[in-house]
Length: 344
Image 1 (cartoon, rainbow, N blue to C red):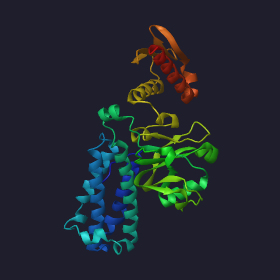
Image 2: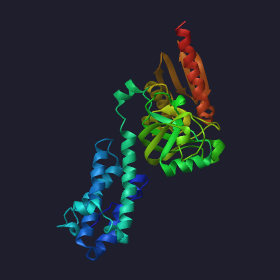
Image 3: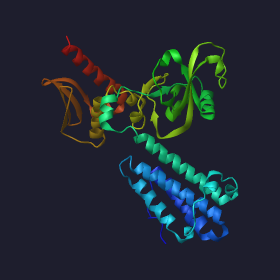
């Protein structure tokens, strides 16, 4: 019985799923007679758990090849004769300590946990993708981009599943997620955002009561307890060496490639930037856009912005690509000036 289509997998979820399926094919099914009925029940439970979560993801995000492959493989595994007449036993699933003493099942359990965590990240990435809501509620930025004072603080935050920030700085803003910013000053080539987590609990404490990182101070801090830290599939690169503390939304956290892309003013600005980036990366020529009463052209290796048929900004695309964050700030300043001129 062929359980997997051949081919190389570039998607992380697909690779993880292939490990899960391959392990069952190579280490469970050929040796099925060495497993007890309870052990086979638990193995079947792990497959069903992956399938259930994948179907949930499928209904939330556009169908991708990786997602469809996981569903296909899981259903095929469950249909294998090995699992005929093997029934679910909740008392075993809820307390699998004895079952996990089997080295094969323990290994499968760990692979399935890794796959499920990857699938959950996909769910989080798309849970705010209702475009109509984004355009209306872009300003409700509930991701705190938090800084670190030293490298050790990162280790403590990850180990203890928490983050803390001065109450005065955060104010009354409701924070649902934390993204940890690693500055170039502290982390060199590893500067940027690598980790993020969902806030499980928020407490207001005196700084001295946050014992994980001791400090004598009566200043009020927020202590955010994190459900679990996740590693971004693609880290967000840092383009500066200083410290950064700000707010963004989950939508941009999963799409930004550099730090400055976290802070678009609204959804229209994001769409404008995304359109420009696509045209430049795909080397489109002779294309134009309308944005805030201006005409934007990409033509003959140049980016040109016109207002009332007058050029208000122009740059060679090769120069723009060398320092996109700097030139994007210049473009924003052009539009800020145009807006000020109109309001006079």
